[in-house]
Structure formats: C-alpha cells, structure tokens
Image (cartoon, rainbow, N blue to C red; front, side, top):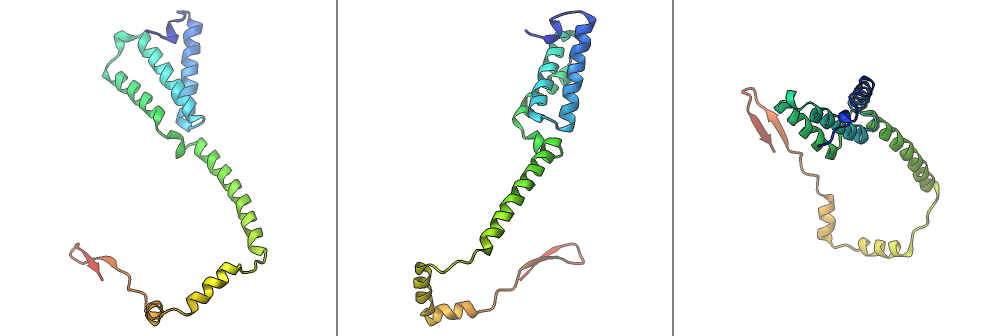
Length: 155
C-alpha cells in the first residue's frame, strides 16, 4: 500500500500534506480547476486513510468511493468558477459569430436559378394543396386544474 503521508514522519511533512489537502479541497469546493482538484483530493484522502487504518470506518470507504466516481462526473459544469469562465468564453465567441451573421445579412443576394425554377413549380400547385394551406390552425390543447384538484385535459 502507498501513502504520501508515510514518506516522512516529521511534523513539517505532515503539516505540508494537510496544507496541500486543504488547498485542494478548497479549490474543489469553489470549482476552480475542478477535475485536477478532484483527483488531488481523492489522492490525498486515500493517502491519509491508508496511513491511519486503525481509526477508519465505513464512512471513510464511502468517501473514497464517492471521490473516485466523481472523477467521471461533470462537476465543473454548474455552480463553479470553471462554468463561469466557460460561459464568459462562450458569450465572447457568440458575440463574434453574431457580428459575422449580421454582416452576412447586410449583403444583398440575388436569387439562384434553382430557386426560381422551384418557385415556378409551386405556383401551379393543385387546388387541394392550396386549400390545406388556408385552413385555420388547430386550437391549442391545454391542461387545467379543476376546483376539486383534478387535472383536466382540454381540447
């Protein structure tokens, strides 16, 4: 078995290991470098629990398992500084794409010959197809709660 805490028994080394563990836990809590800090918290937790096997319980095993399996989850996607950073980067790239789209809209375009050809065929549509296009749109369906608390489907 391995443990970074067993490298040295000196007080300075143990303080350094707990400081590294505390920094990694804080970065994981705030969502800064989430994947890296999650891995480092898992390594430091396994290292500490391996050093002190005599005081461990089933909660420590659960903590180890949860930290390991959370390595495969997208923890940094919501409510973290990583997600805030990604959102800001996406907004700046969206602004660039929006300006490019507006430039494309401003350029006049002439109709292509293929669209003119298709337009001629649609003008001579059958009367049945034309009547379908003029029919009114169907009424929307909705759910309503009655006074008795039951839900009614209204057509």
